[in-house]
Every structure is written in C-alpha cells, then in structure tokens.
Amino acid sequence: MGSIYGEDLAYIQAAGFGKMARGAAPEIVRRLSRNLSGTTEPVATEHFEVSPFSEGRSGPVPLSVNPRTTERRGGVNESADDAAASCARKGAPIPTRRVVDVGCGAGPLAAELLAAGFEVTGIDSSADLLAIARSAAPPADYIFGSLYEVELPACEAIVALGEALTYHDEGADADALVERFFRKAAAVLPEGGMMIFDVIEIGEPSLRGRNWSSGDDWAVMAEIMEDQDARALMRRIETFRKAGELYRRGSETHRVRLFDSAALVERLETLGFAVETGRAYGAWQLGPRRRAFFCRRV
Ligand SMILES: C[S@@+](CC[C@H](N)C(=O)[O-])C[C@H]1O[C@@H](n2cnc3c(N)ncnc32)[C@H](O)[C@@H]1O
Image 1: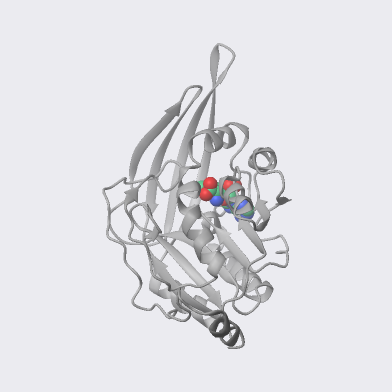
Image 2: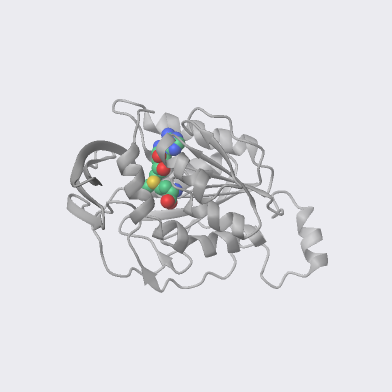
C-alpha cells in the first residue's frame, strides 16, 4: 500500500474528522459488549459527515437493515442460564476482550473502546496517524503496516471504520486484497467473534463533486471522481496547513473500491460469517451510499 495520510493530512484528519468514529462508538461498544448482532436497533437520529472529505452530503436517510440479515439470535433480555446455553451453540456470541481497530487513524475509536474496558490493537499504514493515535490513546497496542499485509493478533472482534478496508494502490486488485483480509479475519476470529466495517456502495446518488473543510490552522479541498463500471472512486485531495506565517500546500490521491453490498454479503457468508447490514451505527447516520456490515463468525 503506497503512502497516504502523510504528515499534514494526518494532522487534518485528527483535528477535523474524528466525529464519525466517536459518533459510531456507542453502538459499536453496545454490540461488542453484548457481542450480539441483531438486537433491537436504536433508530438513527443524527446525520454527520461520514468520512473525511465526505462526498454528496445529504439529509437523514431512514435506517435500513439488509433483508439478507441472518442474525436474530440472543436477545437483550437473555438470562445468564440462557446465555450459557447459547454459548454452547455453534457461533453463539462470546465475550469480547481484545478489539483490533483496523485503519485506526488518529485513534478516536480506539480511545472510546479503551474507555469501555476493551483491550485494543490499532493497525494503520500511516506512520503519522499512528504517532497521533499513540499519544491520543496510549494504552492500546499499535501495529504499523498495511492491513492487507500484517498478521492480525488474536482477538474477539475486528472493526474497520471509515472505509478503511477499501483503499488500494492504482492497478492493485482491490477485490483480491479485500478477500484476503476477510479470510485472515475469518481465520483469526473465534466462533462468535465480530467483524464490523463500512464501505461505499455502487449506485445512486453520484458522489462526484468538490468539497472543502477548514479549521483554525488548516484547510482541505477534495475533488471526487468515480467510475462505477470499474467500481472505483478517486479523491484528489489538496491540503493547506499553517507553518509559521504561511500555509504549506500538499496533495494526495486516494483510491477506494466501491461494492455491491448483496454480493459482499454473499461472499462474507461463504467465508463463514453471519451478516447484518445497516445505514447507521446506532444514532450515527451514515452518509449517502455508505453501508455498515455487522458480521459474526459462525
Ligand atoms: C477515513 S480514515 C478512517 C480512520 C479511522 N478509522 C476513523 O474512523 O477515524 C481511513 C484510515 O484507513 C487507513 N488505511 C487505509 N488503507 C490502509 C491499509 N491498507 N492498511 C492500514 N490502514 C489503512 C488510513 O491510513 C486511515 O487511517
């Protein structure tokens, strides 16, 4: 994986774009605490930008759960005896101790997971973001490297927020890389372990356009292009960061895979996951064409 999120974009990401992870955290903690997918879903009430340089901002979209949902086992009122019995069943929920935060970025989710009592390992391919995460959420372990290459540590849950699974180099076989990651996840997770991530879907509305954001000492502008036939989205990003009296200018290009969610669900089921999907993390409404996947190893 080539170098993305260099020093200035890492700074901007940390300063301006942690809202999604912090907004999604309560639902992720809720699910991992129970390690049950398919329990009563809070209705999304808020809508925020879903990712840095988020494309095609829109108003609230009703929560929807994929009709292919397979998880309905284990209720919120499950008694201790029932829970013990259900643990004996194949793929039943298990207690979560360690969570691997894949593409952890500046560590906003890692901090929330630590505060909720989980052990956390963050993985990221940006040394600059990892340095920020290390100081923002120091008790976590961190691994520098590409999620496609590194060995996943033993854990009961894997999370990858903000389309972290889908970045790839130009010309790379993104589907093969993502498939390899899912196989690794399926191998490392015990039965009942959870994997939670989000992607951008193919479809409408178009995400093409330009947007910008700024803070006291930074600004970022992005042009978004997509080729749905190639299931590819590209962001050309220009950064400006205050350095003394002047602003330093930088640029990055990010390539992101787009997904057919029904095909992805099928693939995950083949790899041994029960899958539920939605357009929100609890009260945190995802942006247009984003979908969250809540998967349990069975
Ligand atoms: C949009 S940011 C989301 C960061 C964080 N998950 C959050 O929600 O705040 C995407 C993150 O994925 C990381 N990333 C992208 N491709 C990666 C790869 N192949 N291996 C590891 N990290 C990757 C980036 O460095 C970046 O931190």
